[in-house]
Image (tube, rainbow, N blue to C red; front, top):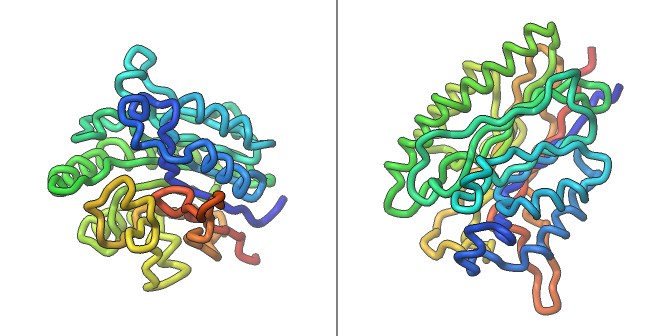
Length: 298
């Protein structure tokens, strides 16, 4: 059994072959090339890979197939409304097996607002075995905030956390406890909560009561860890010219759950680029984040 595993989380902004991309082609920019580069840089290098905003189901399947040696959970929307309302846009890949007879599950957020009404966002949970170690996984992509509707969007997001995310975490914790398994639990994804705001402080307090800590601040202290950087990432301005301030929106949290595991490193992978004939492009308007976890010596 290895005493180490690593995790990647990335909002990809891939709209090719999706209904939003069909109706608004400006959302698509080098999508197939960016997807290929994401696969190249991540395939085999991480034990857990969580992707969001892979909006086209065809692309989700292609990326899942390309992750060699991984098992991938692809949550599905209601097939009757998928073309009109989009997909969950999420994939969760593990270089290991889903543990026992417990298959991954997905629960939708209710009462999305604004443009997010056109997405089946929600929460994936899973129990997996990686390098002989059982892990609990929670992946999400939360309600976004849009310019001039931030208060409405924040209220909706907070309600969805209370109604859906926190109960999903508690359910997973209770399941592991019922199995007498002391497994670390990882929460990852684009939470759309801006770090160091009142909302973040409330959210962190709720997670701390559930046993989690923010891996970024645990390892890197007060460093900003921006994952959405309008000043440096040209793709931010390509899709939203109103954005000015850098933000940390993408997170990895750990609940050690009496397993002895701790986060030893977390990075913002701003160096990941796609080299074209004319320039280098970022791989998304969000930078990926990665974290390494190790079991403390006995």
